[in-house]
Image (cartoon, rainbow over all chains, first blue to last red; front, side, top):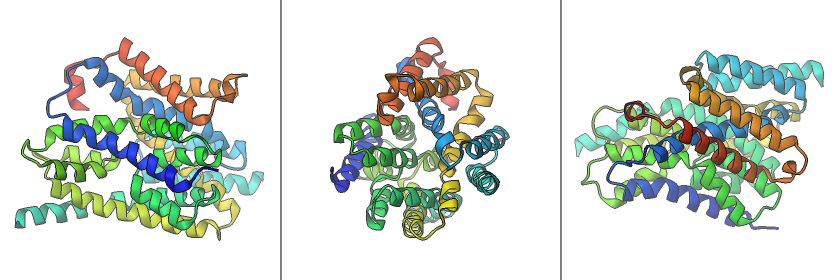
Length: 101
Length: 239
């Protein structure tokens, strides 16, 4: 079994270096449009890959999760806030599970 | 001195919505962390040391599966790589004269939400403003984690099951509005979801751990998008 504190320190070190190095080292603008584009697309690819299909198994029931996913998609498409989308997805799943599970 | 004091207070005030949002999301994180076997202190310490929602949520899977430290490092690198772009953008808004120490302090709080407020502030970014944003936001982040990790052991399972949706709802709220405006981002989001589904269920591929799955999908999709649809200078300026 690995040590949880070592995990946390490894995470913190990597995450901090990512944030700190550009702020301290890069004083001039990045010129390569390919590197800029790659960095720009990274969060969308990462968050999408993390969300689907994992979201289907986020609750106890796949059907309830699917309903939550659908509601979150519709609300975020209508540009509702982070908090609204997250809360509504949770409420939908909670209510759906009352009937399904 | 009074000017920097005002900047700090302005930061504290502006970050109140972030603080409330973080409370809810980190509450869900605290619950999941305690389910993954972390103590209340370990979960709170992780929130203090990392301040990254996606990174912390994704780490729980690796901790549960007793993954290698190198895999954890690589996962955090890829999941949090977006902060590199944000820090790069912020470095352009700071005065050239800002000391390395002050830059290091600003770096601690580079998150999607704090970055959003910092980069849209008018004119130069004063580190004191960032400090205000960070103190208020991180307070909510740690408090939520603490409460979630405490309550996680007391709350009914049904409620925990539903709260598991919170983080995915937040992720969708970040990526979907931009997909609506930009066809390339829409293609990136759909391709990443399809690839990730294939990697989750296809024979052989499904044996790859969830950490590496995210890494592989991200690099393949973002590289392809950057190669075929590089962003032009003017568009990149707006982002």
